[in-house]
Amino acid sequence: MKILLAITGASGVIYGEKVLKELAKTRGVRVELVISPSGKELIEEEIDTSVDELLSIADQTFDPSDMAAPPSSGSSLYDAMVIVPCSMSTLSKISCGIADNLITRSASVILKEKRQLILVPRETPLSTISLKNMYNLSQDGVVILPAAPGFYSEQDEVKDLVNFIAGKVLDSLGIKNDLYKRWLP
Ligand SMILES: Cc1cc2nc3c(=O)[nH]c(=O)nc-3n(C[C@H](O)[C@H](O)[C@H](O)COP(=O)(O)O)c2cc1C
View 1 (cartoon, rainbow, N blue to C red):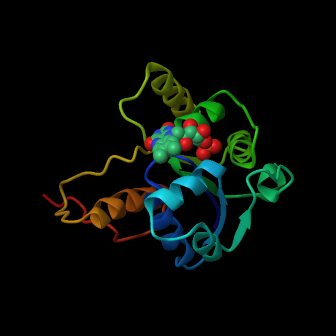
View 2 (view 1 turned 90 degrees about the horizontal axis):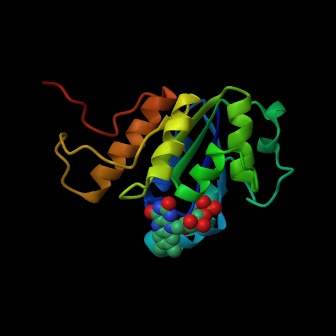
């Protein structure tokens, strides 16, 4: 399974870090990574792991300005693309087909090739524009997976909340995981 992971400039880059680390250690998964310039700023702001450390975990990395990188072509055959966290800016661009950097271009390629696109938006409250964009993307088969952890599975620490969202992303990808405690009434 070949997955393109993108980290953009929304709060919650820790979710992207966790998804990256989980995918990297999943047998049979190849994870390729691209981080937007704003995503790099948020990484420096919010987590202890450096951008270079994150990049070193992936099987391959791309510069977000490299429009000729493999994911910009449908012939590269990715199984899925995950954008976590996904800024409203990137989400809006994807929703209306703007492909002005490698992340937005790759997302539009994933859509035209009818492959799986998972977006983890982080913003609150949501404007009508953002809600409409999410609705339109959902109509196109995109998984909108808000960074909104559940509190029903004995979470004591921030790490548990992060694991909940990372686990949901892996669930959407069809990757078995025990990152969060499932509801067993
Ligand atoms: C500290 C900080 C936190 C931000 N948090 C968010 C956020 O949670 N959600 C969001 O949509 N944008 C957020 N932004 C704004 C985006 O970073 C900005 O729109 C940027 O242009 C996104 O670019 P990108 O999508 O190419 O990464 C934040 C910006 C800063 C400086």
